[in-house]
Length: 262
Image 1: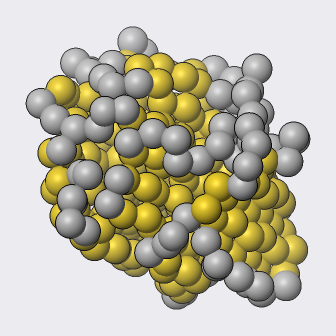
Image 2: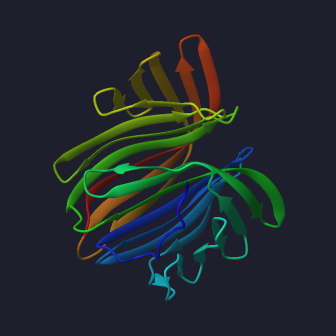
């Protein structure tokens, strides 16, 4: 079962992001709030060019009520009952319906991942279909220092990958998940997975999974305020996932963020 998205911004730190892939088009949209900073952003990679669709520093406004309906003047996310709609100016719209949901503790609270969302999109008036991903977490209290590496993507045959190596405050946090199109989940915990700049390895029960990244484009945003100074960075990458004799290609978003939070 999947749960509706809750209202945005009711914690010390709230973060909601959606990624999507429709063929060679891949992109991301995000709402991010701390006590001293509001951030909203969206971008797409067309296969040849990275386009920054929106960069906003707030304020982010959540409508009254008990469902997600939040954004600024250029980006809006809204719970629809069947899923979430995302609108970025007049250029990009997404209709995302969750099919699978995973929740677990992230050292501070509960994180929500929806890795294989059905996605209907329109970019510059061109309709398309594909797959989406959502990550949502909210922290009270939030640590002041943090840093993480995160890889999320899809193979060309529809498997969903998401894996992270992080430190929140002084608490270590690591995981690896690979969801097959038929619903089988390969997973590894903190002791099994490790990240490098362009590679991830996870020792799974059936043998190691090796993930390789080849950078295509970079989006980044300094998150700087009176209370924080972090650099948020997302790389669009060609993705290779190897397990034994099996080698699969795809596209991924490699996200890193290091600094202070507050």
